[in-house]
Each structure stands twice: as structure tokens, then as C-alpha cells.
Image (tube, rainbow, N blue to C red):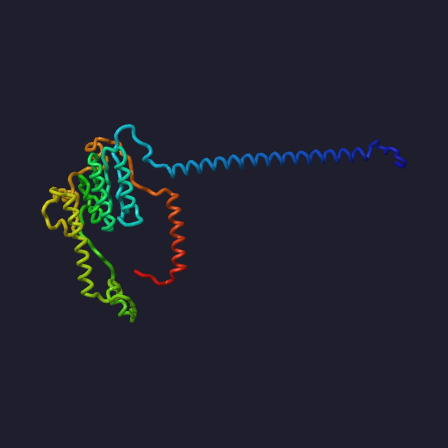
Length: 326
């Protein structure tokens, strides 16, 4: 084995080492190529998933921003505007939303406009805005009638709003009326005495503490509030008389704050006929297809509004402190 003499077995150690190194190199190369191949596949899957997710988001965004009113029926149609829920600012039944829907409906090529009403009432100011806009649009578009269709309930401010319609429809079991005005609250004077609490109210202006629930009632304040409620009530009465005209029967109970079923409301002249929105569109308007013009915020508007409210609340609490003027 010395001086390069071959081993008795005839094997060369150098060849064995070369074979071993070649085998290890091949294995490493295969592993490296396999790893690269897996990385390429992972990248392709990642890119494909991102493209799919992006297209999916675009479809959702298109659906959120799309306006169903853009899809017009082939022939004549009837416009629909919903008046649903409490009539107050920043609600679905606010004057801003309802009036926006009415304006869009009257601008369209609809044969007539239906106001589908399901509301217990709310703000007399917001209701008055809606009533006035109905009267204005009727005068501006005399060829386009507007019908109010009551579903479950149309009471108080709701009836105030729709009294300006050409005709009012309801179902036999609908709740209609409540033509009156109220202002309610709670008094905790007796509770404070029971627990030995003392009310410390400081005002500038002798009447500024009016309606404070922790102070005794003041007869002079009560008279003032009743006068104010009487004025609003009379405005309500005048609107109903103007809107309903000769159809309204002479009955003092109509303006007493009572409410009735649709069956009795017809006898009192508060409702003209029994009919649903689809019946009115099909049988009275003569345009069975209905297009909804109700104004609704899309999700981007709601997000923006939520962010704006949060910022406003934060700034208010930061800079306005604990005091407030009411």
C-alpha cells in the first residue's frame, strides 16, 4: 500500500471519495431545485389568490355603490319612496332622506309616486318638511299623482307628512290617526326627598330651568308649554284639513289624539280606500313595475359618517370640557 501500491482489494480511495461527493452534490442540487420549484408554485398561488381577492373586492364595491334605480324597467313604472321608522334627524325616515327620494322620484319618468308609510310619527318639524315638499312637487308636476300607502301604522307625524298626498290607502288592520302633540318626561322630586338628595341648579334666565326633572313643577311653566303644544297641534290640524279637504268628516274626535283601524279611518275620511302598494301600482296607476327611489346610504357613507362622528366626539370632549349650554 506504500508508494502508491494498489490495495489488495483493487479499490482506489480517491474514486470512492469522488463518488461520494458527486452523490451528495446531486442530492443537494435536487433539493435546491425542489425548493425553488416550491417557491415558484407558492408565488403563483399567492399572486393568483391576490388577483382573485382583488376582483372579489371590486365586485363587492360595485354592488355597494350600485343604485338599483339605474336598472329601469322596459315599459312604464311606478316610483316608490319608503317612509319607515321614527321621523327624526339622522334616521332613515328623516326629512333629508325622504325628500331626496321624492325629488328623484318626481324627476324620473315614473307615471306616479307611492309613499309607502310605516311610522309611529316623530318630529313635527321633520314631518312638516316632508308635507311641504309633497305639496311643492305636486304643484310642480301636476301630471304625476302621489299616493300614500299605509302598511302597519301611520300615526302622528307620519300622518302629518302624508296628508299632502292625492289619495291615501291603507289596510283594514292598519293603525291610523293620533293627530295630537305631546311632550313627556319624568319627575324625581319625591325620589330625591326619599334619599335626602339636594338639587343645586344654577341658571342665567329665570325660565332656563324649565322641565328640569329634579325640580318641582311650575304652574307658569306648565301654562307656557301647553300654549306651545296647542300652537303645534293647531298647525297639525290645519295641515290635515288642507290635505284631506272635503274627504274629511266633521268629527272632533279626529283631532283628539285618538287612533283607529283602517276600517274606521275610512269612515272618518282619513283614508280613501283599502289597497297595497302593488295593488295601487297595478290597478290605479296602471304601471305594475315598481322602482324604489328611497334614499339609502351606502356602506362608504356610513363608514365616513362614523369616522366623522368619532372625531367630532373626541374633539368635543377634549376642548369643550364638562360644561354645556342647552
